Length: 414
Image (cartoon, rainbow, N blue to C red):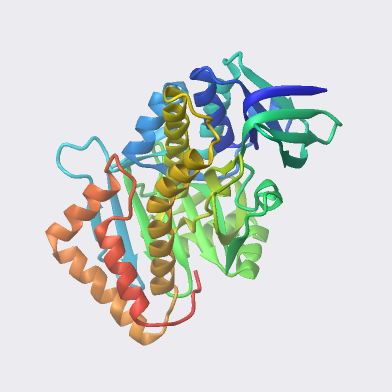
């Protein structure tokens, strides 16, 4: 069986579903291929991950009709971020600038996946190929020919990879990628706090570990602990009571008693930077385009921005009567995305290096940088404005930290 469409998307995660919904609403014929069953997409399992969304990301989700589908208890306003270094008890505080509604918003990954599916599911011009895998992609004169594991074939003007940072379809398209294993794993879970901090996020760059605290509804928060894999495995094996006690101790008991709510989830920390994001009649979005380290919390936001950039390029090609997968159309998308993603990726790696090296010179440097930032109001205001901006780009303070980190070589530990 041969069928044709405008865009075939490989992967029905949040990136693939969002792209499918946006393109279908614009009248394009979309085919979406994923091994998952429809029931799994409609009611995704809670994976423990909480997403910090920028104002730009919220605006995109509103434009794509996703944000209104979130329940009032599924997102929380973020008004301030606090960054601690080592054993310091005084953080650098970053707040939203005057007039801004918030520094950002917190929402659960599974809730964002659900609303992305709900929007896509209402579109009549999406051909759902669920329970299926792509086994081969080849190019013809004016189409890509995609073979599925059930023996069927689809012809598409453009094929888009949205199948994770370890994308098999990206590799199948001949696009190489640099993988950076940070030798750490991240444990995430929700906990109930005796002393909650509504609207305040923590990033605690302690010696030997990185701790984060993301505020949710009421007295709930998402706890994020980064440690060597063996330590994460040990934490997962503890009884709930023993886990509560150890986590409260790791957070210096600054939040009082802490009680586990739900499951504990662990993820390896691996950054992925593809050498390209496009090939002939082929493009990557989401984590398939670039896999960020989570320390700056911009991976999801970058994925949404990349989708918007690709949609803009496709829409422009349509208005001009061009092939939506023409080489210059895809090159324009790659250029737009690279201008945002590459500096952010490199700056993030530099910050990881700076705050993952516990040698004395690096401790002194990072403590000095945070103290200067804390006492320099213009610096903090600039950082707050950049983080709450409606344009995603590496903020100047982050670029300055990145340059400082590159001064001293060393090991990346977080």
